[in-house]
Structure formats: C-alpha cells, structure tokens
Length: 194
Image 1 (cartoon, one colour):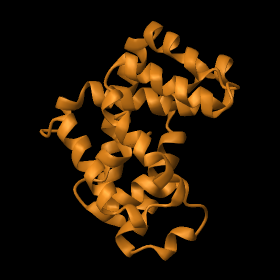
Image 2 (image 1 turned 180 degrees about the horizontal axis):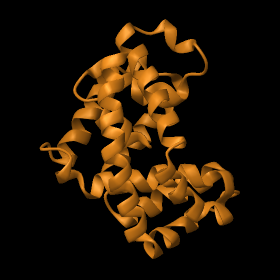
Image 3 (image 1 turned 30 degrees about the horizontal axis):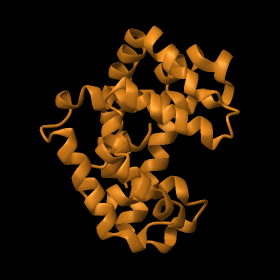
Image 4 (image 1 turned 180 degrees about the vertical axis):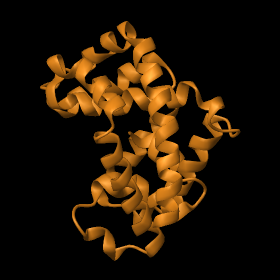
C-alpha cells in the first residue's frame, strides 16, 4: 500500500500515524531511537507491507503489469490501490478526504523535527502539489506515475501504467475492494498485538 492507505489504517493515534508514514525512510533498527508510539507505527507499516506483498489478490494485480514493468509493478499497484481508496473514500471514512488530508499535513508540520531528512525534503512538494488528494483522480495518478518515472531516471516507464489502469480499471478496482476488506481486519488485530 502507498501513503494514503498507511495513514488511514493507522486510525487516530498520531504517533502510530507518524511511524507508519516515516517507516520507509528508516532502515533496519534505526526506528528504535523514536518514541514508543512511533516505533509501533513503523512495526505496523512493515507488517502491512509484508501482508500486502504476499497476498494472492495483490499478486494477481501485480502479475497484470509485470511483463511490462518488472519489479516496478508492485510500486504501481500500491499507487493504484491508493487511487481506489481515495476515489471510494466515502465508503471508508465519514471525514471528507480533503479534511483528512489537511489534518495529516498539519500533523506533519507540527512534528517536522521528528521527520527523517528525506521526508523533510519532499514534504513541501507533497503539500504544495497535494499528492494525497490528487490520488482520487486518474489525472492525479497520472502525475504521480510521471513523477515516479522521473525519480527512476525514466527507467521504469511507470508513466505509461495509466494506460493499463484505464484498460483494466474494473479488475483493479474489484481486486482492491476484496483485498482492502481483508487488510483492514488484519490491521485491526495487528494494532492490538503491537
């Protein structure tokens, strides 16, 4: 899953949200220098990633793209699934997406000094271009995939994945819905465990 799903799945616990969001910027056991609540968020993030990467429904979505995008297929599916979460947001949250996103950006700004340097560096761009809200539209996803392709020095060709998303939209959407229902159950029990 990508940013939006990780944030959403953290619930209302601010430290859990922060840890879940910054986890990809922390290698190995470096997360242990953070407060316990943030540590729990990192552990949750890693559990979500493992669950997602090994789930048969996600593997099915990835296989649809693998012939063209190789190991970038998983990243593309993470972004595509965030699109469906954003596009279907009203089914998952009573808080409107724009308000949810604004509150999250405020949380990051209040905790700026806690954020790892890579996140501090991209945060202004994330807020300015409103990445999380842009996930809700195909145009927004197209921009995200274009930016991701640029970050890979145009090796990934991820910018073209919008074509597959449009072509297989119904398949990706039904896979997301099925998977996300199971993921939410998994995360509820995982939060209790950690």
